[in-house]
Length: 113
Length: 117
Image (cartoon, rainbow over all chains, first blue to last red; front, top):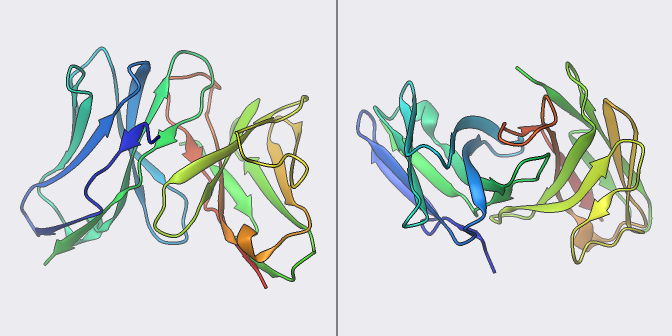
């Protein structure tokens, strides 16, 4: 049973517009959420995170929103750039201590110039 | 920022041979490292948690005798795929946290593409 779900395998957006990537989770113990960007044959690169005590975190063009009651988070990228084209993974972890991350299946974002 | 280095980046081996993958934390110490595996178009799946100076913890369905993990120092963990078979062909990625506590991001190596022929 997947605890972190990214239901859209792909998304295509025009350059300059907003990209919205969605993620749902089922484990109510998750209290820390992250987004990673991944290119083929490379490891994931950390983008932005949010803890469960917040509902929004912003870093430049990237904003993550968390809706705990809906167990839903989203990543907004604005304005989208062709260099943003990659696979984006949502991840979550539970509790304090050195815990692993649980990943979604990823969403492939294509930003068209 | 924290850097995790993984070597080799790709390897092709014959069925039945063993392959060792190294994971190093370059500018921080990591008492714990995590090994993930990714099959094509799939998610990153946690294989095992590598603990410095003690035995690794394996996820359900991962054979500990097949995927040997050694975490002999605070900056190095190794994963050895023993008697590799074609179904072991995958993308293996290690990760670690700088500071070793939760609520901070995991930093990932660049992965190792293993192809078993």
